[in-house]
Image 1 (tube, rainbow, N blue to C red):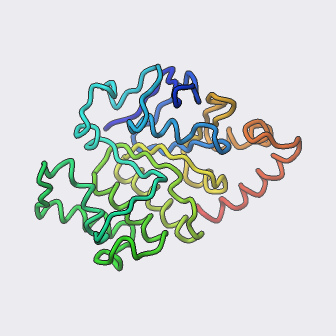
Image 2 (image 1 turned 60 degrees about the vertical axis):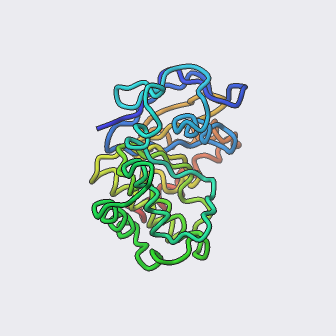
Image 3 (image 1 turned 135 degrees about the vertical axis):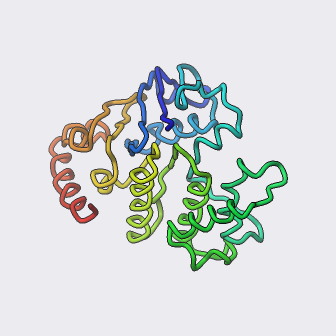
Length: 258
């Protein structure tokens, strides 16, 4: 099974946003990237998924340097769910999910019976059967997010990169999607790296947390190790004493999600 390893990775847009980042995500593990807006979480994910070129350092997909993999080879190993909205014209949800099979279908994109089965399984896993034949542009944001997650699942990845997968969703959609992600990591041994703003979900979903602050990785550890008042105050520039009160509420809330 594949994993992600970054060594002294520097990422940014001409100017470094995050410097000298070293971390790894193992098969079956969910790593949550946390930090304030603009701290560089999405920049790291976009670099891993080749939407941005890394500035320096090394990035490994399994034992391979990422640059050595073709786009198709990478697509067979890694799927992504990013914050950018897609706008497919006149496509059903089934057809959108089927886009996840394109690394396996060749240039013409014809689906075999096995491909269609994989698509149907992915749709069922996220509970989107009721919208499978509906126009993707005519369903709710929560339903679209389910469909996009199904597309990532249909790709049969060993690694999943998720950029704020629960943003702008109602609470039940958030819980449903995070539950599916947790199930995928455990049952399919997928390495998951995800950015997330909703800190209240992190103790229930993440095996480890990467905290980002001031242009670098501040700390890496379990949720229990990262979620201290002092750490939150440092990362989010809170007033002294604020962090402990927030931690108390987060830990109580997380008990409802496990």
